[in-house]
Amino acid sequence: EIVLTQSPGTLSLSPGERATLSCRASQSISSSYVSWFQQKPGRAPRLLIYAASRRATGISDRFSGSGSGTDFTLTISRLEPEDFAVYFCQRYGSSPLWTFGHGTKVEVK
Amino acid sequence: EVQLVESGGGLVQPGGSLRLSCAASGFTFSKYAFSWVRQAPGRGLEWVSGISESGSSRYYADSVKGRCEISRDNAKKTLYVQMNSLTAGDTAIYFCVREMDEDSGYYHYMDVWGKGIMVTVSS
Image (cartoon, rainbow over all chains, first blue to last red; front, side, top):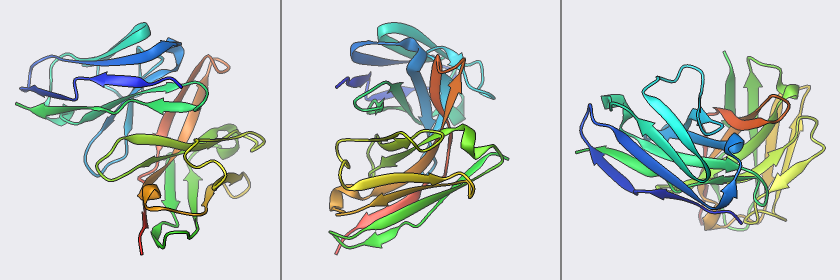
């Protein structure tokens, strides 16, 4: 079973700073099937990035994704107040069909 | 407006059963695969089960295999999951999620989520 490990667990930053979130897979995975989600308290997750680097509809260009093989990154170029949330990476594959990382919390420093 | 609305949650006793429903609107339901994803209080996301567009293929996480059955009614635009032999470990918010295919499956991702429904397993 492929495991997705996100780091750091918590990222403390100030508005305007750059956030770099990591997602590492326990074995090589197809970048076509890697997504990133944002979740705020009491809300459903929201798709930000799919296929490792493609922004979902309506997502600000502050958000960008990159990576291949086992290492994937979500970058938020300049944090806005509404960007402080929990971010999950995800992979589509098999056994299980979908796997999520445990999340990175981006909090106000 | 594209929308998924879950229903059927609530308090269930250990060992009990529950059927969740997800009503879809604003798109052609039968053209999409769907999944159920859950989130225990204060925890991360866990995929539970998935179903293909026609319903002919069904998939389950090991944690629910044998206790869970996913189904759909394309005429009613509704997704279901029947969960049996519930334990405290099944306590979570359950999300209904649409799966998107692009370029004949080259890209596959979850693009639309319901707001979720709480299931609490407790005596």
